[in-house]
Image (cartoon, rainbow, N blue to C red; front, side, top):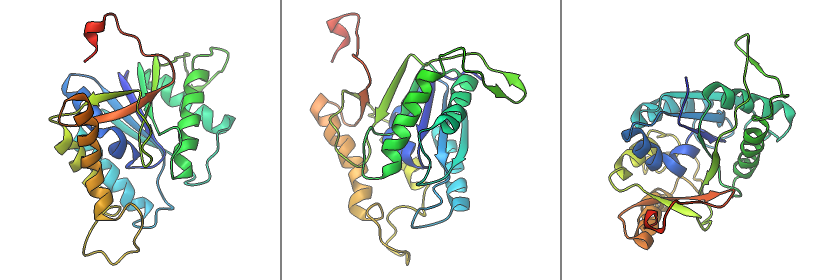
Length: 238
């Protein structure tokens, strides 16, 4: 199956928090989108890997993505090496996306920055035909996405561009709240973490509102790019 967009996250819920509005919008425009989670989030303070599996499935259904897979790398301990790069290369060649979305270039959680660089490096290597990969007994052809964009997570990284997600903030929040084990629940007896506060949950919306305010729309999500952004005409900019 060829996809238009393939979004990677170090943990289940990274993609939802970072770019679910954009994904929902692109799907509404007829694009085929998939999600690849690098780990099962097994080191998360709350919940379990099994619960996160169920939550990720629910979130994928809410967003309407074409496929979601988990590479089952070790949460907290995966590294950017040949072994892990090859597994991502297999996914890139399998789905042949034009656009790849991945973790923030640096962030509070060490897996986010690691995942960002790992996916970016693998996307480049995936275009080298002398790197041979086999999936399901079939030799894969080289494929390099046209662009790699990084969504924004905990830190307020200055975006290179934003996507208007007005009309899709409710879908984004519904996909985030599918991870009931991870976020604010006033009745929870589990340990408190930085992402379980009501302030963090509220910040998902008010950050999108603030990014939207700056560009004159209701809600937006920000991304950083690895190369110059190009347009055909100044009229393409708003």
